[in-house]
Length: 537
Image (cartoon, rainbow, N blue to C red; front, side, top):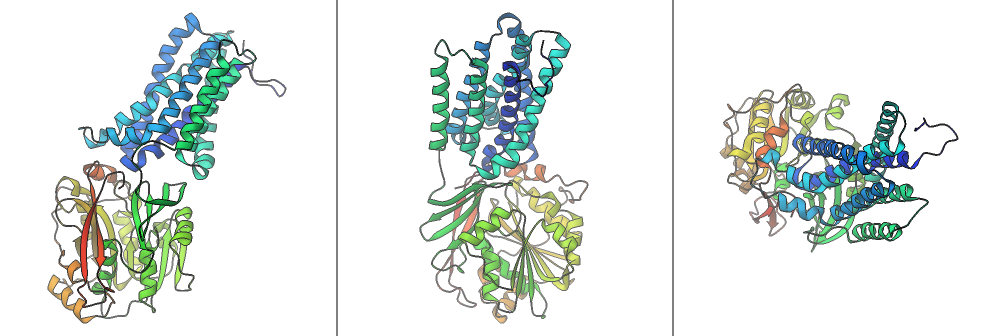
């Protein structure tokens, strides 16, 4: 009979096996989110699918393992379970990206499209780990109730350790292949603990073979399409996978496989992505008063804030960025100006607005992603807070990724409707045209007077804002149809459901090919549309 842990008692082999199985299963569950996010996002559907598949696989493993344990439980079979788990994890590390991208094209409703990848990648190893607890309980013997309770308590403690260790230590420090290899090796270590002191029947060779497969998988880093260009830096942050990639003369910041900021290495103030040119359009919507303070919520590679800082010497730029690793990467690889006119704040944009006593002429909301949007930055309550921190002639510009019409437009139209609850006038500028997923710049003003496209074009010619936006202003839209979409509120903001129509859609990101310095009146702008796959280029 298994007794409780005492201060001088060494855990038995079954106890060690159960503890490690808990660590490994929960670690794999956390890792699953990182592997799936670049293709499917971190939506409630992705995480609901992960949790559901893991619970289903564990339950099936408990059931089948319990039946088999009564007839043939042995230390040797338990060793086999752990080694099979470790070998499968090596396959996940090697072929995970390939499987994720291959299953993403299956003709399934978008909210269920991640389930095949989750099931193929994580169902089998989790099912195998489900065998461990009933095998360990059978091998321990003794009183059934006490033994079962002790075994499952140990497994739960292992799960807690796996969740905290993966979340707070492994993910911030290591790459996805390295984390996968460590979790697989934990199963190998459990196999060694269960097999000791006997290593007969080739157990040592099998252990060595699985360990070698895991090390090789981590070294190779995965088979499948990768980002084009030279990766100059990459890390797993507490929030996302971050990569800085050089391709020719362009340096791009990728977050979870999607491009977020780009910089021309030869001309850092040239606009690489066309949507950043629209940030300057906010200056056409302000009154005659001079703009002297701008807030960016979301820093990314800080290309927008840096260009504002460099182009407008009388403007002070505040930037709020949630992820400290993004700030560090932007400083090291994109160059954040060391200037009293550019202030970087680490934290949540909404909380910053609630706590600051400053007001702004322009707030640029650049914290949305195609497949993951912080709902607290989308609601009526947030828009009211933003309005309070704007001057009387202030402007809010939100960079949305959505479609302007069609099934993939629900998030854009819901956000448009939500902003209209607070701001008297709301305008929008799709950057690519057509009903495709693209950057849409939504501008909200506190002024009742309607600005027509002709009036904006006249201001563009009259005002010296350092850039000619006549082409961008041609995309002018207003009065969007919103009867079939909700107003987003703190107590009900179904953002994940509204993003659902974009799952699997190509993201068309327009590049700005400026033929000269792009100053006002030059008209020297050509655009090229680049179709970004749902998981990145």
